[in-house]
Image (spheres, rainbow, N blue to C red):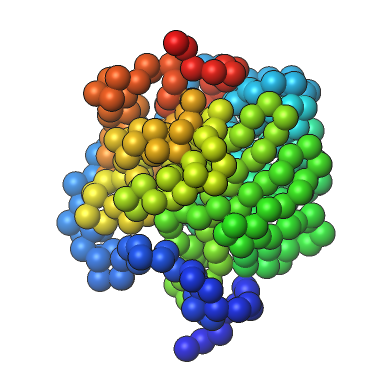
Length: 331
């Protein structure tokens, strides 16, 4: 077996010495299944360009409570307790190893890069191109010099592309002290790759951010995995003021179930995690899978109604949308 190009460390319950894995979970589909999906798919037609109902946001320099602004896909600006955090920042037009081929942005970023406030912290969940965009990281290094927190192995990818980037890595269960917040690196049910020869050589994760005004649970990408990780997060951290949860890129289910939850599962995850509020992301920006562009928001609304959860508690956020998250749910 070839060695790991990104990480060397001891065997654990989710690392076999060469590759990371989801304990008791679903492994990434083999190449034959990729071909089966690609050549037999029922792919909805997305528009080439979409206009957000919200104008591009111009954020304040700092926010003392909790405000979330959607940039697009898995990129959100989280302004909390005076700290400015970006999740999985992508301002590029495509999410692909090749600049002129691959999924193309249909919705402009909800914040112009030049309008960003000073970024203190970047949470980088894993190395897929729709989450780890080295072109954007180079721009952030030059303009803001933020601290990047990411799971094991991703530091090698980032530092090879952006020398000098301030970066800290963690394994599942690790606690990382940062100025203004404590970041916990927690499990997600996903996988990783930048090419055909590095599958699962860097770890994937979710994050819990502890702040003076509440806990935030950010999940960049995950399969539902029987809700195991949501239950564990609630048990360990005692619930959340806000969960940031993926709701898109889920069809066909036979192929995507292990890596991308659907909106019904996202609502179940919100409940299991004991989150007061949730922001839905990972939709309406890049067409990665087969569902129509607006379906995740529609399915989410139906799922919330079926569970008796008010629509205001779980927002499917769209580029430019700004949300001042309440301190507690309505009674």
